[in-house]
Image (cartoon, rainbow, N blue to C red; front, side):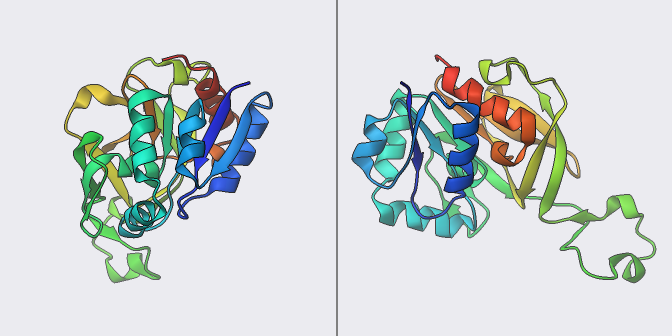
Length: 223
């Protein structure tokens, strides 16, 4: 039986991820883990994240699980989700914050004509076309373009919809790791992959059929 550790460092939607994984892969041994030894012992690791980047990195460091995540990134299948994906990069503008540095690159805030969804925005800026008002955070369903094929995309059509909630997005220094893109005020990276890591900005556990298929594919993936 495949064992999957969901990293519980105090900043993530761990129980929702666990329920989605259990539904997608009832044959797997799924555990929410807050001990490094349990993460080290698992066959696969899911690294979620939620909240402010500085808080996520501080909590990860204080939890004693940082090195367990780093080890998993080197030697076993790892799926990172939302802020978990962002934490894999060098730095984030949020804070700013130094992150794990597994992937070279920077996490940027959405830019352009943007307002934090204020009441009456259109009335206060009548000269600005509605389509140019970019609300932050980006929240809701959005299409994902598959930049290249990958086993995690198996059975998921190109331009399938996934659920997003975020104000920041990763900009990889190496574009070859990009496997998924979406559009919000322009194109942005929403999925990256290397030999044993697949990381997404959206929430598979909130993305219905195709999100569950992604979790199933992760369980079956043999990098």
